[in-house]
Length: 369
Ligand code: GTP
Ligand code: MG
Image (tube, rainbow, N blue to C red; front, side, top):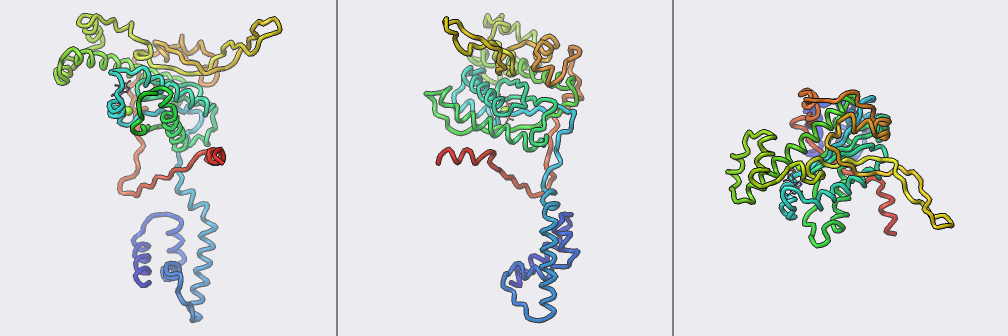
């Protein structure tokens, strides 16, 4: 018991954090009383000791009353303030290994990309505040409507919900897309919230992601064609070093007879997903004629320039909820890109605790009953 008292006292003395609990323990000088708390069997006989015990209980009551304030200090102040638009980007973690282990085709595996798209469609269904999604390779960006109050716009909650849901759907749907292949381990996705101060910033963000898709795909296509033709990896890297887009197009055409522009849009442009009004047959009348109605349905669209005015401003579901694009952009502002790449890091030398908490877990449990 003496040892426990010693440890508690020492930690409290050394503690210079500003947590409510520590401040209270100093204010009420409860160092001695901690022994009671720690041992749970401390005998209180003398009047002096009884007084101390009463003080201690009062302190505990005070601490309980301040519990709300105390717990609040654990919560991050990370609300994405209005009128910023919220974008959640998820990215497969070490997906190079995942695609290798699962023998994905190089550089693009159509089935794997379709699985990613199917997961993203499930995300749109699960979170109706998401208006637009864009993805390629192992990443997807989800754009929330301007007025969204989803989880009080708390970035840390929103990104964890989207990433965990996406990964869970990926695992669930694996068999549907790869019936003959075993999923050897579950993929995980990192996620971040990018906050866009205006439609113009969102436009720059989308242009940035699509340019990345294009540049990576062009490089990877050249890379794997050269490797398949017998070049070593280091030779290939040397050939492609510092080459411009045009040079890569020429290399593909001259060496392999490939016109880059004719490769599938899914690989070159990535995939967009948003709700569109589509005509659907809801029933047939007495003469057997189809009765059609306009319905809002999430559809996949490929477009060469998803950040272009001509694409965006033609889609009411996009400009109504996210705003119009007023002009076309050429070069993306480097400062914008720096802001999109900003990483929120935890303070050094602090304990890191990760808490996971099931979302709507009760419904999942009761289904099995
Ligand atoms: P981190 O994201 O930093 O954890 O690393 P990463 O390995 O996931 O790399 P990154 O996200 O930069 O790039 C995605 C990688 O996934 C690509 O470089 C490919 O190696 C792999 N990948 C994605 N889609 C496909 C595919 O369809 N086929 C193959 N073969 N590989 C793919
Ligand atoms: Mg990745």
